[in-house]
Amino acid sequence: MWTAVAVLVVTVVVLLLFRANKRPAGLPPGPFSLPYIGNALQILKDTSKGAFKKYTEAYGGIMSFKSYGVWTVLVSDPALMRTGLADPVASGRTDLLLLRKRDSIIKGRECPALGIIGTSGDVWRQQRRFTLRTLRDLGFGRNTMEPIMQEELDELLQLFTRRQGEKVDVGLLFNRSIVNVIWAITIGKRYSYDDKKLEALVEKVNKMLLTFNPLHPALRFRWVKKLFPNLSIIRHTEGYMAEVLAFIEGEVEAYRQEMGDQVDTGCYIGAYLYELSLLKPGEEDDQTTLTVDHLKANILELFLAGSETTSSTLWWAVFFLASNPQAQQTMQEEMDRVVGRDNTPAQAHMDRLPYTMATICEVQRMGDLLPFAIPHKATEDVSLGGYRIPKGTTILFNLSHGLLDPKYWQEPTQFRPERFLTEEGKVFKPDHFMPFGSGKRVCLGESLARLEVFVFLASLMHRFSWRLADDNVTWETSTFLSQPPNFYV
Ligand code: HEM
Image (cartoon, rainbow, N blue to C red; front, side, top):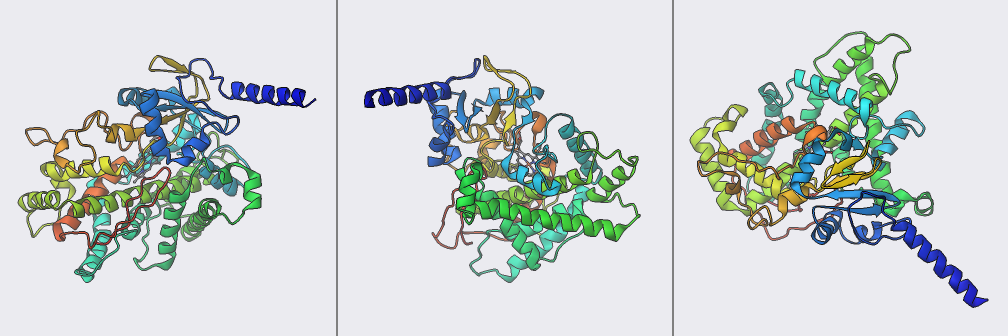
């Protein structure tokens, strides 16, 4: 009897393992995976970035693994990344846990994805196209944005001037200025630098993005959530998402009430509401038109995607430059020559500041802020690198590999802006450098982010010299956003 049970158990286990490892035809090779959870444990044990590095070393520039029953292709080879990112059928989105929570709060029930980041097909095209066009009309990434940035910058410079000589924790200091720039564009208003509500919101967004880990069992299994409702990952992701959304919804409603029937296309929300007003009654539909629900989702995305990324890039920049006095001095000397001591660095100077621009590239390379692009999905079979990736497969583009691998960069752990300069002193960005992604889903805010990072960083370096206050540099691990260390200057 016991022998029969043992044989049965072994047979079931073997069958389960066989099923878990039966790769759909066309997928590239990869590691052995466990039933149901697949390779999630392997990845959770490490960081995603560390695990994907090991996968790339073991299986090459394109491989596959399984995560909670979903086959995922990891693309690390930069040429394959460029090809895949440009392919419309590799540009869908998988179900994004964090945004699914947001959408179910907006709708009050489970529903198809809203907004830009989490949608695919016509819904995505429509929201992205409208948003890009409107933001461009509003001067996104152009010199018309400079006065808004200047106002924020002045406040930040005053703060650093007041605290000159003191030990300053740079931390989330940039977030408030960057949020205000986004806010000026989307809703046409700014918050006072000392606004406690804004400060709390910024901290929550930071915690949410730092803690979020789509592979964590607490976000995967309802029973884990029920048993441990106070787990910090649940509070920091789902809980904070609900709070941030409540804030955005409050702002949208306040705007609508304040404006009444007046039309104001001078900010994103006004332009969106105006377009909505052109629809006939009953025409509003999440799948085919702009809607108030998409509007709330889009604003939250501009806020999430546009604040933490740009602020953290500035935070990384101060860290790298404070740790590399030679690079800092070269940048300052270039600005003294081109901008002069009595002027403020502006967009018009960008072309004449190659070392400064190369420094920003080097900050983005070493900071490796988003190690892999937001997960894509194959909306049809995708041909890539000699494989035929079946429709429905998740595709992860390992941007980090092209930024940090020694195959592409000499001494990649050294901070050397010169690597982005040609012998003639011009800025040169190789094809494997893709901090904003590339192709169909390339970062929607790239032009704004570039301008913001330049305007803020150039002015901070032009006005002050920076050095680390002490050796007390502490690092936190995060899953999909590489947060800079905590340090004092
Ligand atoms: C230095 C700052 C930034 C970096 C490094 C960055 C990087 C990225 C990356 C790698 C992606 C994923 C591309 C993909 O999925 O293939 C992305 C998407 C996106 N970014 Fe950024 N980003 C930055 C700033 C911004 C800003 C300022 C905004 C808006 C104000 C923004 C809005 C978005 C949006 C909406 C998407 C989703 C696009 C889509 O799904 O079609 N980002 N970004």
